[in-house]
Image (cartoon, rainbow over all chains, first blue to last red; front, side, top):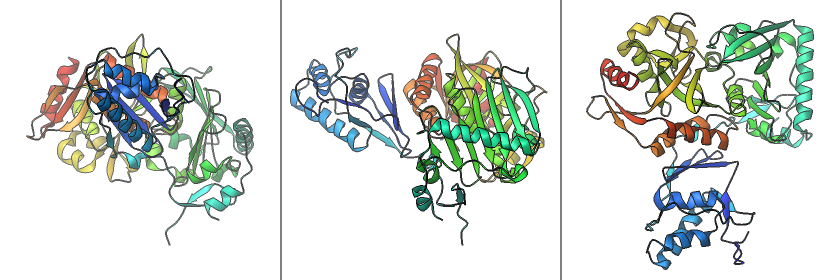
Length: 146
Length: 349
């Protein structure tokens, strides 16, 4: 769970299969099946999520942003805060594999604080049984209101 | 007995073991009621339905889009029975998730199960991609939305296993050029699609279409010949379609329409040449404007995936590929449906 520097906080992965993620035109879309929420993040946020998907460590991600001319302190704190938000939402979890050295951004980005947008309008679509009793065989039956 | 107590008494069962018990129960049902087999064409493939007795035949096939198909080999075979007419129940639930949540794909990964307490239906797919089971306690318990769109959960799992995705979308147009409407329930996809039907386009779906890539291009297949529309919208804005209303009762008060398989209104298959996200026009005038692919995916994917128990990364990746291969637009839907259809017709002309 480290990136070779010994820091266990620096490697993450998408929390599959409960969460799925896809990046299109630099904007990341994440869908969480347990909660029915979905999320999006563009620009720096999309790049960070794409990099995590491809196995890049946070060290590598921060280094990529540093080439854009922003202050190291701003980048590190911004990336750390965003990652913490992704962890709090259970969208990413600590990674287990070795970090990938293949990922590289396709362009130099000026770092701006990443924003995670949360959407809750589809929460009621979740496939969840209502509160129920069970029959003699053990299969649920819908509870009839008294 | 409550579900927690029942779950505590479960004997752990593997996926293959549960499937073997399920198959054995179906064979027992066939001993009680004679087998009735139908072969239907669906998404360009053959679907084989084997019923234990006739009780569910019409209930579960009337509104499928496909007509008769050639026999074996079937791309998907579904074994179907009910307890009321066969007196055969399914085996006990195999895991806690099914008792408490109604859905599980925990049993060895390739076997997917879904159970609805409200309608007492059990659906199972896998581990072979061409095998599925469907059980219901009583034909009378099949809810109207399941009658209008039968086997939707099973077909969604089967779609992903063959590299396709059952998408929450409306599709209208012609065989070579068709529009896919994306949007959450209530956004107006059905109304827009039906307005296009009235204007002379053909309807492939109002709600559920099977999408795949064919020679690198997105193609949609019809699954059902039904459409849902708000009853007031039908009366006031789409009166020419009132004759297609069925007797099925929708739980949210919508009218369920059914279109004949023959007759020209329906499309079985279409090449998608535009994706349109649905919105409302503030000034009441319809417009079709360019839309980003990222936002289009954000509208299309969540409502598709969150309604399908167990489909995930493969389906999302396919939707992303599809979105990136066709032009995307957003519709600001105005009051005048004739004008709305005319604007959309320009996308397929």
